[in-house]
Length: 93
Image (cartoon, rainbow, N blue to C red; front, side, top):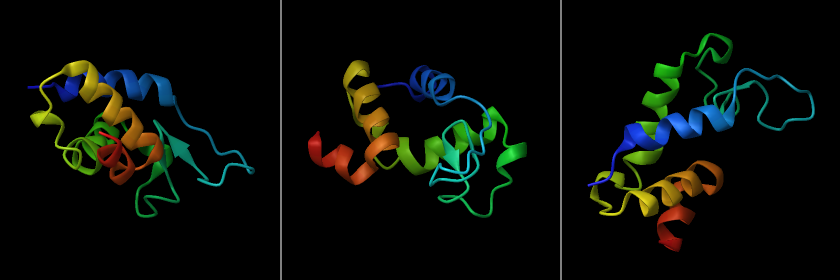
């Protein structure tokens, strides 16, 4: 069994804090969660815990991360899901 907690902290750190750059097609973004993808979320007020919940529900659970027996593989598939979409990530797996 792979652990979500061990990989989500890495993703949250890597994705960084709040940005709202005009040339970013995602618009407002915090911890990698964009206003474009989540229009009903107050991005500026998003907490790490809220972002982790989104990552769990919309990425980890969709790739069935708990069923991947190798943590390194789970980390790669999860990261790919975050950056390329869960469909692409599971297809590549």
